[in-house]
Length: 212
Length: 100
Image (cartoon, rainbow over all chains, first blue to last red; front, side, top):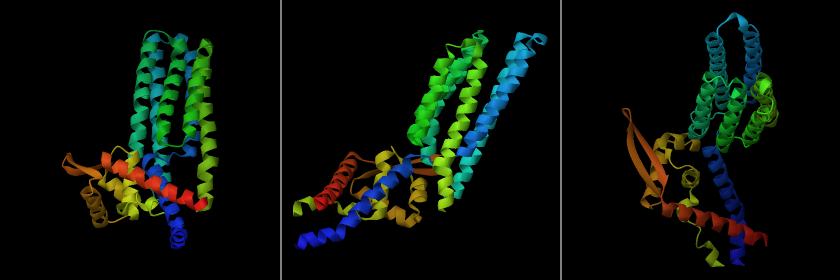
């Protein structure tokens, strides 16, 4: 009887302890400051870049092959830098709003997981371009990007895992439509980013704003 | 009845020590500043709890330099992991018993 009473008093305490453990494990191992808005913007940049790329390609007859390659690569690089900058800016803002630190160990883990497939994919794509295999560039970059998202998902929202799968799938489907590379690229990097951004925004960001 | 309390570890009854161990279970290692930021405690407070865990042999300390700045990283030891797992299991058992 005596133990039973002791027990009732402590049950709440034990439950709280377990919840604390779970919270600390999640909080320290996952980066939750990815912002939905940045996804929407990044997708929009990709769509604009795709449109611009189409303009460059349609004017191709006026330039040499090397000039076209340099112009398209420069466009892709500029889009990438702009996208990374936007993602970092919005993540930083979200972290500050929630009084959390941006330079979390979880962020480093996430970057470390994503960077290998990302750089491999970039170099792979460059190699394809330099060898003239233009038709598979979109496919390859989408697949490697998807793989990097799947790898990064361990350290952030699990939704990113499914986003990565969709990117991989888009890349694989694109393989069978080699002359629509730019369209696949625009869908994978543009439309999917925008959809994922909207999804994240409504699932996490908006709710947490109304809560506070 | 008494037996189920056996694995409830006194060292983990403190919230900060519980937090430190939780984080070291899922992260290979963590540095002093990250622990401090997430737990929202003062330097002295955190240091004393880390010391207690270190004394119990549950964590190991790795000191190094990043450039000129000293960098201290903490890692859970094997016995620390085992003790913490037993502690979690004991907590779960206590709650389960209560519900039956």
